[in-house]
Every structure is written in structure tokens, then in C-alpha cells.
Image (cartoon, rainbow, N blue to C red; front, side, top):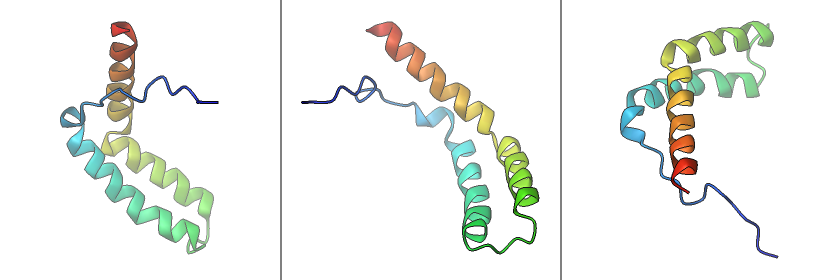
Length: 77
């Protein structure tokens, strides 16, 4: 049976969020490897710091932009 993927043909407008995506990638590359290898004495504190940096990097703007792309795509259908 073929599985339906309703957003498979949607195209995300990356131009609007390119700078934020790069900043988010930098934050993730700073924290994820160290978290994965248990390098932080207090991982919960490190995760909280990472979340703060992700928000400062534009996470909410990226999320809102992608959601707008999804909403627009669904409205066209």
C-alpha cells in the first residue's frame, strides 16, 4: 500500500530564513556533540542554555515562516 505524504510537494521558502537557519545550525553544532558524549556536568542546564541560544538565533521566526509555508500550501489545495 502506498503511503500518502500530504506535504511532499511543498517547497519551503528558505530565502526568508537563511540567516536564522545558519545561526541555528551553529548553536546545534556547539551543543549536540557534547551532549551526546556526556561532556556537560549538568546536561539539563546545558539544554536550557541551548534552548535560549536557539531562540536568540531565530528559532521562533523559522518555525513561524515554515508554518506559514505549510498554511499557504494547504490553502492552495
